[in-house]
Length: 127
Image 1: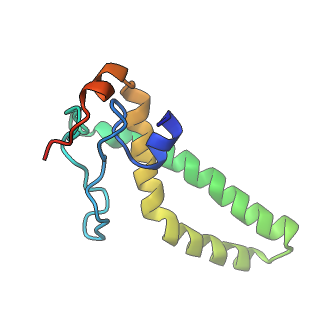
Image 2: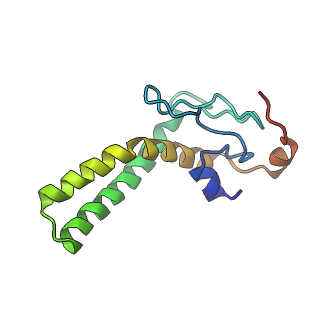
């Protein structure tokens, strides 16, 4: 598994086998993460406020997406600004939790490096 698929599938950055988030998705706590990886025991929240930086990734991701959607609707499709923003609000509401989760996954993958030895030594799932 490469780094992009590890980020996209919310896997542990060190072994790329364990899950970052508790499944199934829960609307009451959408960012519920495991304390550590079930395979290599990498801590997913090393300190309080660790994922503060993920907000910047989320902001960049959201800003460029919003500009792209509104720009496409207005310039290519010829929609009014009201219709463009109505679509933007709808898409933003649907993608909010996805963007929050993918931003956290990207952030921890920037900080924690892949360890081939840990990945090879952790073949069994620890309950």
